[in-house]
Length: 471
Image (tube, rainbow, N blue to C red):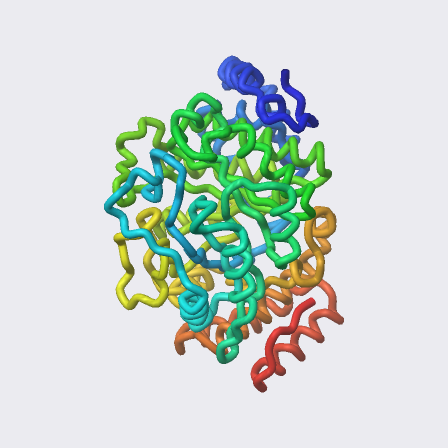
């Protein structure tokens, strides 16, 4: 029985409700009065239900798609402006006890070198990331209670936050580790993490259990209910995501939006972020063996639909995708991207990108400086801001500011201030010139005159060697 307020996975992600929704969408995919009504609702920036979004996904009308894309562009601009938040993943360990058939870290893979960073190696990786200019990390580790216990993760977080190299520091650590207990989520919260991220992989229970045949991740309910335990443990910001290509994309979009609706119904705040990964080639993983892959056009449509359905959420695209795909998705809703990522354990200290321990193939292999320059040339402000998390603007406090538009008084100047830090400390000559031109131009778009004056003063102070200002 479908109940978005239930805490039971099979009730807030109801298989029967999804099947009924997909049937309803198929029956109404050419119902233009209904589609007009849904598009008009989307234009109010209040979001769409999983059923409404499914109707738009089923509709193949080109005019409807173009209107949907235009709405996605405008909604993204309204909520997030032209800012793009930058981050990098940091792989701590590829030891894993699970048998996930789509991931090269699965425990049956006997020829991948297993590695776990020592604290000295964590320090070296973090310094390498700081020397690029990164301020925000997402730490990743396989599930292994012996090799990667929570104590190890907490020690790594403490090490990461302790490192101040030259003008560099990591100001926000997001965490992407396996589902755990309320008590462990409390400990992560106390360690000062930003967002807790956990990809569902697939919302289709039967497929989920087949794709995770062994290990603790096999437990569909425990995994799917993790976000509720995280929020009960005091973590305000959680990040959802499915791995597109494992199951039928129409099913996945419906389940993903139902999960967002569930979090809103139970906790009063939806997901802080939604990630859009697609299945990619890796060590012993061939994506061609999975028959649910989606092409770039469907991928773009999914991105736009998530943006208009959950207008307040941050949307993340990684270096799994090519520069061309990332460029299109930036227009349609993505607000966070990774740059210069290494998806192997210890990869940042290697001169040549190691491939033998990569979790997935990296399509966009440009340096962070190149990505920052590319963003600015496309009219986006690369932002290294972590201020909301550090000022306590998380969970419902962040969402309230975002939904009423007042977040621009914080985010826009913070983006320019952190871009100035990057320009002064890490940028190439061309990138620094573009950054300074963009900062001067974008200052005029800070809504409040007083904040604009303070931001100008901070920019001057950064030129004089001071760091870490925030609104």
